[in-house]
Length: 211
Image 1 (tube, helix red, strand yellow):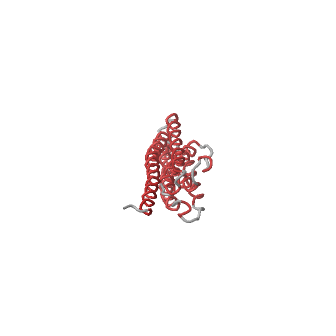
Image 2 (spheres, rainbow, N blue to C red):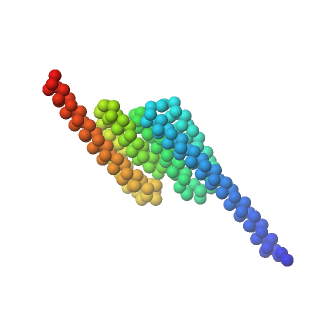
Image 3 (tube, rainbow, N blue to C red):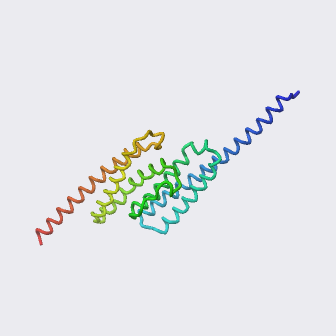
C-alpha cells in the first residue's frame, strides 16, 4: 500500500526527470548548433584564404547566428555553458572574425563586440595569428615578399601580446598552450620569410650584375 512518503517520492521523481529532460534537450540542441557553427567558421576561413569575400560574409553571418542561438539555449543552464563546448564554439567564431581582420588589416573586433567570452577571444586570436601562416606562404609563393614580412610582423605582435597574459589556464581557457603553438608557427614562418628574402636579394644581385 502506497503511503504519503511513496507519493511524495513519485512526485519529486517526476519533477526531477522533467528538469533533467529539459537540460538534456538543451544540451543536444546546443551540441548540434555547435557543430554547424564550427563548420561555418572553418568554411569562412577557407574562403578568406581563397579570396571569396561574398562567401566569407555569408559564412560569418551563419556562424554568428549559430553562436547567438547557442548562447540563448544555454542561458538558463549555466552548468551546460560551463562544460566547454560553448567556449570552443565562441573561440572558433572569434578566430574566424579575427582572421578576417588580420588579413584585411582592419581593426580587431574585441570580445565585447563579438559577444564572446574573453578566454574564447584570446584563444581565437592565437589561432587566427597561426592562420596567417597559410596566407603568408601564399604571398611568398606569389613573390609578394613585403606582404609576407608584414604578416610575419603581425604574427609576432600577436604573440608578444599574448605572452603578457600571465594568468592560470583556468582563467584564460588554456591560453598558454595556444601561445606555445603560435610560437612554433611564428618561428617556422620567420625562417620561411628569411630564406625567401635572401633568395630574392641574391636573385636581384645576379640580375643587376648581368644587366
